[in-house]
Length: 124
Image 1 (cartoon, helix red, strand yellow):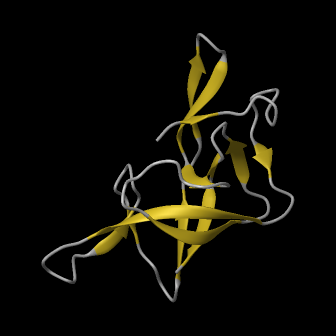
Image 2 (image 1 turned 90 degrees about the horizontal axis):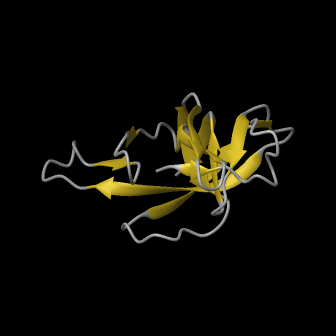
């Protein structure tokens, strides 16, 4: 998944450091297996495993910019933890989870109610 940075929120193409916790929605896909010990929650596009311990999962990743889109001069973000501030617009058999981006985390807001952060806590 790739995020197109919202130029209104990021006029200088720099990340915002949150001054308070931000609650978002993280969508995950359940990867079924015939072996119940191999069934697990994964991210919808990259299929990265998400492990819940005591009802929560903590994800961390560095944000990586992907450069500018030439025709509209918008910054693309390729790496980071993607979540949604609004409704999911795709149909990939996903399940919504309540999640929190903690205070002090760097984020980029996208143009499609999406957000990329360096840290995310997902609640089961």
